Length: 135
Ligand code: THU
Image 1 (cartoon, rainbow, N blue to C red):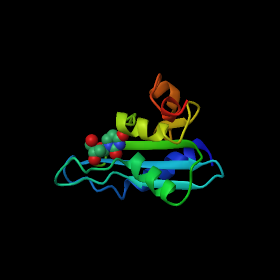
Image 2 (cartoon, rainbow, N blue to C red):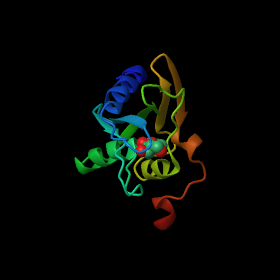
Image 3 (cartoon, rainbow, N blue to C red):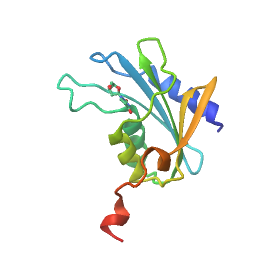
């Protein structure tokens, strides 16, 4: 699975986004260590707070299926039919990913034509994690 293919899976997932309040649709594709892909979209709610981001939808789907080891996630997002040049994961999603992924976990942003690559360590440095509770 190439980074471009993973971004394309995120784009497909974005089509399922339920975003009637913000109009901002996000798709994510999470790659496991054995090469399986779990996709997710954002799912909004009239009460706003229960809204779930695309990244967490993908992660929760995967973990609930027994997956615990991940290598990368691709994320795309934008309002309506437009796609942002970059749709960076929110702070809550970064922290949620950190629970299962280390600093080397790859975060693939941008578009299939203009791929931007980061690590979770770059996006959430000096973070609090399970090692702090059980050193
Ligand atoms: N959103 C995501 O799905 N992922 C992010 O990392 C940023 C924000 C969603 C939540 C909400 O439905 C919409 O984008 C606007 O914030």
